[in-house]
Length: 290
Length: 339
Image 1: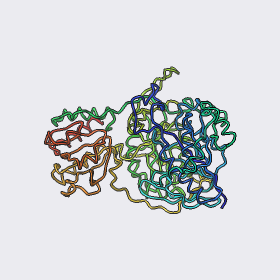
Image 2: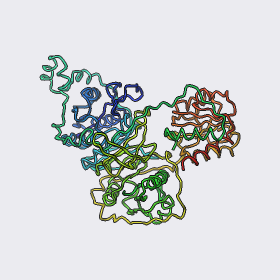
Image 3: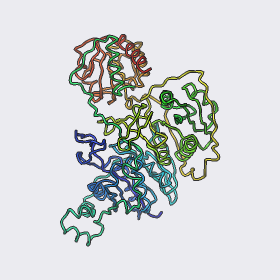
């Protein structure tokens, strides 16, 4: 079989296990700068599936695509350290405030510019847990989709067989190529960094990063072109601005409430009907039940 | 205003619980905005399926019946739902946040360029005023969900796009029939006109689905009983409360050892660990072996005759009283207040 062309979609996410009080901006969007940023866990599962196919089928290439601020280039470097071949950072202020629909519009346009047989993505990102961007990209590219993949079983020139993890069982399906696959957390963990690749790619930079760096890097990239992490803007993917950012996002955040449920000391109730009644009303008002 | 729609998930010829819960919610939303409730059932051999759907107050049921529509596959189901929505222009459309619903709904949202909110824990009707556009929106859907790993609760709206799409997990909403004799109308979807060979891109080779079983790990509300519940009969009260609140029942090891509940419900060091948004500990003293499995619950209410029981240390509310008296009062209060 010929080698496969694989695109892996990865997202740099705020580590939601470490959320501080500056996490939200006044307009209800996320203040990513105030949070530690990590490689979205299920995107690592997706990367591993791609790398396994690269191990299995000679000539396979793995390209990582991410959308985010300049510092999201860290995700691409991390993927290179683990075995990916190259990466694209989709970055532009005009993407800010995009919901899943606007995000999938932009990512679909970017993917369209790449040659691919399989697009892999994590099932969902831990900052939103929506699991929407993968299927929405598949829709926009008119691709079939296979969600919740646990293992890619076999690939032929025209088909791929995949084991899926469902809520209450498993399913083995066969999809025509090209296709989009989202990978579930029950899939194998991603391999760790490879020292050889860390040495090779530790100076990989985007153009944006180079502008902040010393000139030595420019010369280095001239000598070694693989150190260039491609950077795409709205214009590079020929996106219509109306479909991006807040204007391209049908969902709006109306209200954000911080969850402060923990009382310091148990409030003692004597268990009479009227006390229970006011407790139930309170729980319904704050959406604990209802 | 146009109608409220619910996508009914069918597994082995039965309507999934989550869909019946959504129909219950859909009926109440439709009443609030003064519209009808419609449902879509997609599958194979669906004759008579309306009998289990109409009692939830469904006015119109769209049935798409074809061999290639069962079991669930993304592309054919997307095509049918898209077709029905394009024709009927729903105001609101709800899907279960299940393996199928979370696979299907985003594609619908993308194809219709509509806003979708995943895993809502509450749905309400309200108004919205957009200051920038100086525009008022009446009776829109508030889609309320936790975000950021549960650290915040966000209210999301889709002021401009229709349908307003949302998914909801199983067990979050309560399930209640409107009337056993409620009569709706069945409309057959002309499936052959919709399906094309390209929709056969994904084929199912093998499928192993287990019957719905106890899975308290994902329950948003857990009613847990300990030795203090006193009897297996009293444990039935906990099931009743769980049913009413849309939760599930857990147990301490002492309760399992006493034969009040099965082992798969055991919470704690030798059982499972849960993190629901609400944990009601009934007759549980609160030994660390138990609390290790539930202390990350967002809110804990304990019901215990002993005010000094260790569970009070981690509870937000400690109701002093006998489970057999307090639980029925909670059920009565909830039923009264949720009307």
